[in-house]
Amino acid sequence: MADTLQFDLVSPERSLASLEVTEVQIPGSEGDMTAMAGHAPTITTLRPGILRIVSAEGTQSFAVTGGFAEITAAATSVLAERAMPADAVTAEMMAEMKVEAEKFAEGATGETRDVADKLVAEMSELAGALSL
Image (cartoon, rainbow, N blue to C red; front, side):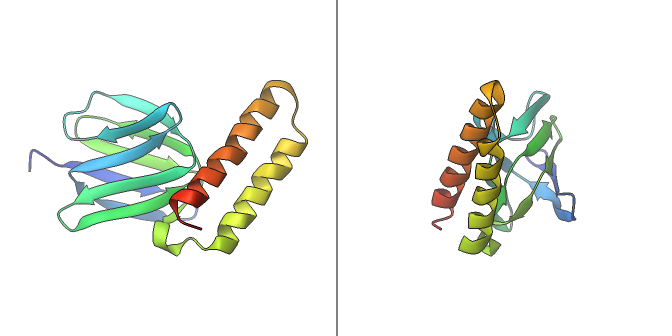
């Protein structure tokens, strides 16, 4: 089908998805974006957030904590630092990830501190988006 693109989501642990989709909603570090068939070639980094894919089977959501996405006219590949189905994330998991981000921020200085503080805020936003 000309209106679909190949989508692949991979984390260090496993491949989470590989299917034909009509759109991929990506939490990019510079802002949210939607990839569809015919998209201009793009590479973007990810911020913690919800990645959504729309296919003939419906919409699936995944929580991602970072990584990057490569978009072409025919495919979108996401290599995530951590990724899991959004409905599988528990409050305990989210709390652990937020503590990790806060520990990183504690020891950071200068520009690294700014990045670390932003990560802590984004983890809180992700928890809110997941209603945890």
